[in-house]
Image 1 (cartoon, helix red, strand yellow):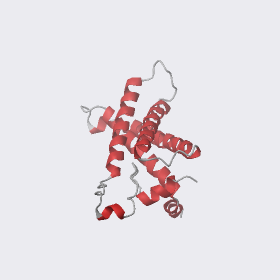
Image 2 (tube, helix red, strand yellow):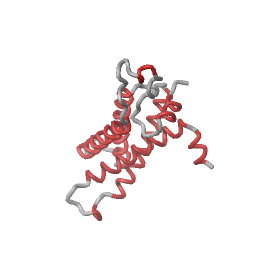
Image 3 (cartoon, one colour):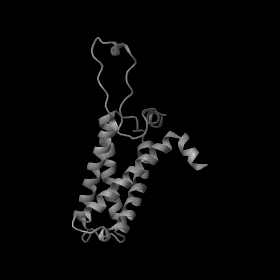
Length: 169
């Protein structure tokens, strides 16, 4: 029942898509930061799950802030840059939250920033891959009189659902 409500509401789908990708990207980056020489058994699985859950929550909060400030109806590149900033911030906040008692001096800033950087790079890759291929119409060709193509987005939601979710209300 709740799943049907999610599928019918494009804004909830947008929240779920952004939180899911943030969690996955942080999970991947955290395991990568565990070291390439570590065996599978020695990777920080529990920590990666904790950080990825925290990143999903941070993503939900940051996306809510974006919706509240009505800054969701953006063209492709501004949307990508906003997503990259939110991904970096969500990853950094997740590392801080997973630290338990936070101490600015003793916190492992190097690892947290490395994870945030790798997470942001994967978010850039996802955004570029989600854009897809859109051939430009040839001037004077039959395509030039057709309706304009749907605007590309860095979201993995369908263009129609994403447009419905992010249009100004």
